Length: 391
Length: 249
Image 1: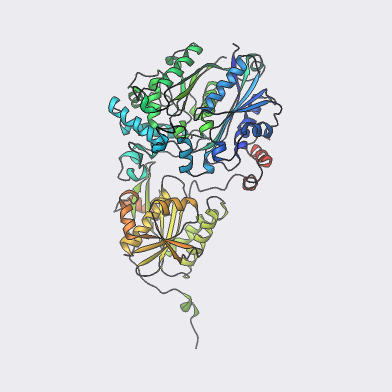
Image 2: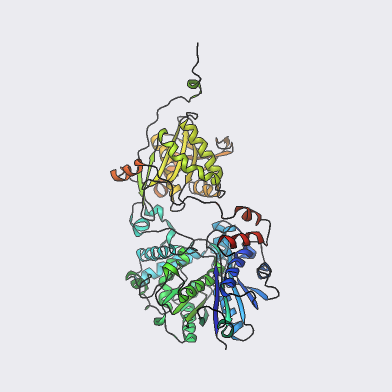
């Protein structure tokens, strides 16, 4: 297989965007093309989950490729729930690694705020099992709450640990112009003060308001290219060195041990093996913290910390910028935002900036190896990526 | 014999008990003071409300225009039985709420404007004015409407307001909703917070000056294109404008 490089990146603010979905996909693509110094690509992959349902738009890839005047490049939508973004990057990787194409544009976009939060939550909930979960009112927050309760009982994670994830990621988002939430939060304000229960009410106990990601619109783009093309462009060489994907049972209750995220474990192991690195080699990571508990759990499953010790590393400040392994320097889904189909591409965008040394105030010093975990369903379809800085 | 027209035009001077200031901690750890202001404070508030007339987002323009007129009418003695509360963080004006007493038993809620978005600033201020109506004025219900979907979510849904559609609200003549004392008591444990007395240093800071909002609501970057985009699925104009705004042209 040929080597694959990330040669251009672009992003919109993750927030409420007041323009059409096709533009939310196209705008970061324009930025990425400019960043790469390219005007043409061979193929376009558009990551999206809910366009037909929420935005009354199907065939999104055709609209995007035309908006960008990139015809006659091939174009298609990749849908894998909240992991659509990393799945689209994986498709792009395969297209170049196989020799089918030399330059591929992967753009993710979602416009959830065209509808109200209840409809958006319901749309995302449709990725649960239709007969065993959804019809009983299961939503992603409710699944995450049950998961959190088990995790607390088994590993001693507390609400304070969850709040510490929120505080850290909100702090990081303050350094990210494109983040959805530019609001500092403190443990006192969301946990300890007499007003904390109103400031930070339970959404699905034990998860509170600040344990859940916002509902965001947004787009992000990464352009992938062959080594031959990448080496002609005057950009730091960042290679997509490892790709892993794994699945788990659709229903969470069918898992032998529901607190084990086997798809995360499997996808990460594949990605690390392909890249020829270990978790301890990683300098910066973006994990899928749609709920604060997931940052802790994923940090263990991918191998950064032993099972049941992620919250202890958090306590020690190891996952802060300046710590041993900064996690979610962008603010993560928790504060940067979660435009579902764009999220995985947004994670890659952050890691590529970090490896290029272009992450400004949130830059991790000397970052050479970065990792992303894009968590589809409730951990039933996960895609992990490893990026390496080469020059 | 001369007639004092001004005396005729002015509202009746009905004394009302004051709102006792309170304070609360926000999610970000900042302490917010909510207090009643007097007529003399209104010009300082108007300066910070006026820019919102031009914010065509979430009905800030409509709300600010109406609030401006209500505050001005209060300042110039052209509204009956109005009161105004402000929320301040380190002196900075972050919310304004107002209303008036319609009768002994009924209050008329006017506006809730958050000048700093997020962290429930507006929600805390709204809860405080309802507290004024029920706990201090002793009213039985407050008539409420919302101009924006955010307001509808915050008041009609969160407080589970009752319909009083046979009664036109003073804001636009639209059908009223009602927050009864029973509904307010039901929401009290979860939505109504605050501590009294306010520490001296916080209250003095708030009273010293009504400082301008540091991060007021802003209009969309390109309103014309944003509106046009509703009809133009390719939105070429929007893309080119945004492109230029970010310094890429």
